[in-house]
Image (tube, rainbow, N blue to C red; front, top):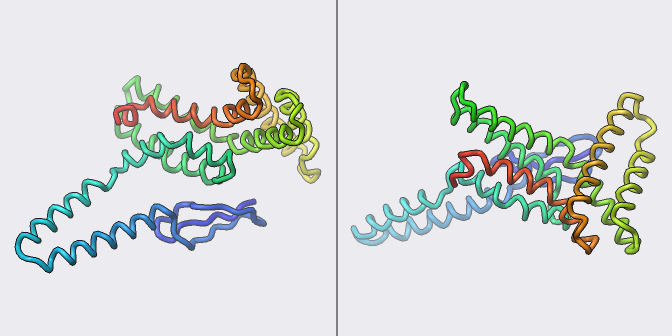
Amino acid sequence: MVKYYHCEKCKKVYDTTPWIGEVHAYDGICTSCIAGEQLDNQMQQESTENHEGDNLDTELTETMKDNHKSVQPSPIEIERRLLSSLEQKANDVLSRKGSIVVLIKEIKDNLVDKAKERIGETFKSFDVNKIEAQKVIDYAENSLDCLSEYEDYVDCMVKKLQDNPKMKVKTAITEVFKEFITNLPKTLSKEQFLNKKVILKSVSEKAVKLYNFYSDTNDSFELTKKMGLHPFNEIKEKLSTLPFYASG
């Protein structure tokens, strides 16, 4: 299970650690809020210094306020920036510099859910383009459902290849599937076991499909990296087709 660390200012999850049960802690401040506080403090200091001068300082202060407003990104711009940075964020996860749980939640809360709202605001109920836009959201949500399991699968493949450099990637895919099935908790009910098996089978089939797609990549670690990044790049590509993101 996981302990979620929420920013005490904006309440968003900024980190996770393994935990007994699911726990939500509301302490600490995320990097976005820290940056916001630093910017506010800087602007307050500059504003105070400017007011100590003559009437020309008043005009300068107003100009700075306008500039401050202009540099504040709009909500749609924040979403576009997150969308454009998905590959780098996924790279961080693959190189163990980030949490897959946090990234999945960030994509869901700050992209997929926001895109749903924008679809409602952008399209009329009878607009045929609304149906196509909803298909994009459905695809993204389906991709997120098993993304954590898929990344765990690829991570275990990488470990096997590191331990045995002579091992083929396709062999690693097969061995990881067998190990995952074997290591399923014995305490699971029959229904839970079958559900887990279906998810693992789906994840394994996805790994095989992407292996075939990138099989012309000679270096096994470069191949597995492409396999790991692929779902994020597909989500990015699909969401980028939505008119309110594509026009940015």
